[in-house]
Amino acid sequence: MGRAKKLMPNLKRLSGKSLFPNCKNPATGVRYLNSAVEPYAAVNPTNADNLIASWQVDRYSNGAASGLAVSVSFDRGENWKTSALPLSNCVKGGISLERATDPWISFGPDGTAYLSTLAVNKTNPDSAIVSIVSKDGGKTWKKPQIIKLDTSASILNDKESITADPLIVNQAYAVWTRFKFLGGGKFKNPTWFAKTTDGAKTWKSKIIFNPGPNNNTVGSIIVANPHTGRLHHFFILVINKGTEKRSFIMQQISNDGGDSWSKGSEVTNIFLPDTVAGGVGEDLVGAFNYLSVDVRTSITVTFSPTIDPVTGDLYLVWEDARFTSGEIAEVALTRSTDGGKTWRKPIRINQSTGKPAFLPTVAVNQSGKVGVTYYQFTSATPTNALPAQFFFKLSHDKGKSFPNQATKLTKPFNLLTAPFVSGGFFIGDYQNMFVIGETFYPVFTKVNDGRDRKRTSIFTTKITPS
Image (tube, rainbow, N blue to C red; front, side):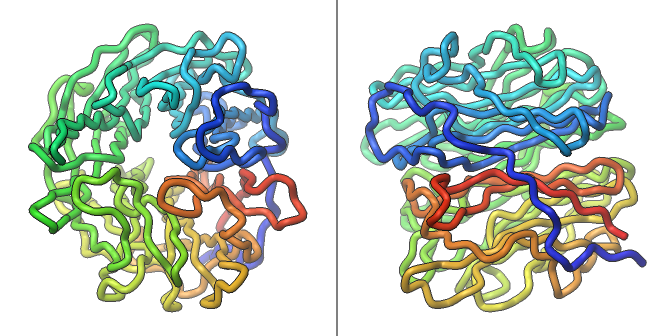
């Protein structure tokens, strides 16, 4: 039985200096020039040599970034070409909003690349869900299209993702949360869904899940079955009762391209660590405190789902404190072998060291091996540093078990050098990993040392089980 190498693989840096060094937007908050965080990437199903990655550039302390970078490869990740996307007004000819965040990418069956972002202003309350497409593998991009725009100070669109239909050309789906603040501590935060059937030229949107007053939905992601086209909508539901907050990962299913959806069903509860920040009704930034240091990992906001490309088995990973009785967050995994009807008891993925593990991502290769990446702190003495490392673990039995030892993808780095944003030190609300055949391709943020003028950079590598 083959094993993943335990040695540190070769890394390729995708990001460089700022693409927007002279952007003149009002600099409310701290702008972390040359920072790169929160990557997402995808592989073209019509040409496995064609890869596209995107990430935030110049993150701000009070939300979003100057804009998004896009990097394209046509030789399966050996070489990359990076440029700026016209998804903020930092790019000539771009949309008029000041900042962009939350990049997401998905390829359609004809090789069309769909990319989405959340665009926001800081000089006014405007927020928009935006899409942009490429018909040539990422070399050029069409004019951005606004899916949903709100200009009210009581409304915030947030945490979008985009998924191309794997079987139907020109059809894609976007999901996000539309936060509506009613005053007096009251709010309505339903999940919105949008569908295009003309290659993102136009979109039709609607609410597909309403959590009820003063409850939250967030982190919506659609996973499509590549054989049947069935859509699995996963999201986090937060139920607020008085001062008590309970969080769940939920699922809805559509068998008709999103025209109708099942009722929400629970996949698993989320056992939050005792140190999670944020009270009932507050903005869900998903931060926890470790050794008196605030770390934003979006524990209450995001998770990572995937589907076995052959069998259709479903997998989910997320941060959870159930294995430590609420002391620290670790990485949990559950799986479904019956199309999401039932889910297995969660298992711990990371090595139990007494130190938090966070920001997990899961992927499955063509032979059913399950790979999980995550960060974990490596030291308990953050006097002038808080060392963390990025790890990869591989399951050879379809996620039933994982080895104790992990592959180290980076050397330890100091998280205290990362941008400090609302909630704590920040490298993204998510990271990413995709698969080509047997090979796993993690795409992730790494914090650089103090000698590097770029605080954080985006890296990729490849891991082929032997």
